Image (cartoon, rainbow, N blue to C red; front, side):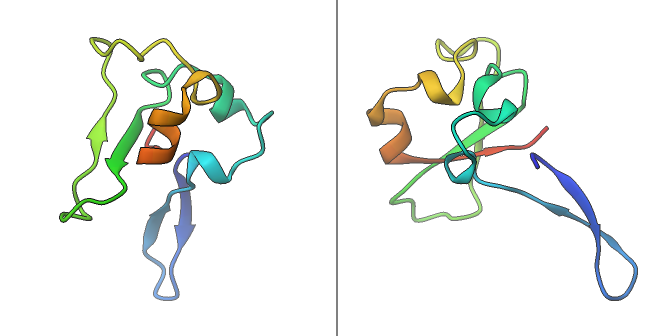
Length: 83
């Protein structure tokens, strides 16, 4: 569900992304370190909707799972697993 390949009507493969917050709390992607799943975040009130930031190993939260993040992270940012 992080990045599922799907075929469009014309046969091209398209990436489908699922929001981490929309998954059930026991889903594996919510319980795997953010850097390992290629997690990306975007400020909720951004003026650039195409701008996503990847969590790299150097981030303090890189070894944390989505479920371990505090509300500051989960309510102020949208999250997705990019793989």
